[in-house]
Image (cartoon, rainbow, N blue to C red; front, side, top):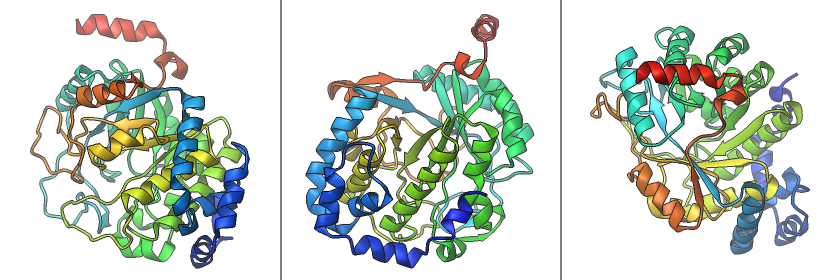
Length: 386
């Protein structure tokens, strides 16, 4: 039994129609409930067109619940791209295998140079990202990249191709703590339209990935849909359905939700569904009202003005100074980006914005000792570097 069994009980068109049919009364019922007691029907009402007039109320409550649970704290992170080699053909991605771009896989020296550059910006945790190329950038390559990172960073996350449960278990002793894996869209037919070849074309294998992560004992799982591929309200519901299932089954695991919207890239694709800034605010607030424990993350895809306001709406995690190309921080800044970023401020500038808003900035998730890596090994490594 996995999420697919529950997913197959829902029809896309039926869910979409249900969301569209929500009334003002449905929204008021959801808003009248105490924190932690909302269900997915309430969530549907909060992401429906009927909730638009209630956005200010939702924003105020989202802010209140976020401060109550997380305090006035914003966590910063930086993604580091190890490779732009990819075996998939995806119509919305700059790394798609058919795009005629220079490909690069960082070697040990280049990896360490990038790590040092990110470390010098103040980060004590890192998100490692690759294109999906299991043969050239598979588990052995990732093991080595983790080994090199372990001495520098307290916490390591990754966003790579979906792996087997056994592969995730193999990476755990190397420092893997959290994994981000986005379904992109939960619309099965549309998914096939966007993913033309490669392993990513397997909708069900990708859908089962968070289950494999949960069974492997990964400490944090990140979910999300790529907004623009299909109706954003319906994809938001299915992401919440997935989250609800995972939290009940793998209750020891932490969860985060991200909100990527399609950005310009090589082989540009026009969004099938347009999500406005106001729509995105509605989704962020709806998630916070549904779940006070959930970490909500916003990347540099979004423009700086929006991000400056989002930290008061329910967001708890921001990327900063992001480079979406392998070697982008130090080694080879000119390699092709996966997508264009919008907020180009440095981590120091983003941190100052956060402090000016009355929040504390945190540059790591949790300490290495939480992952059972003794401090002594990190201290010895530091002495060797010095």
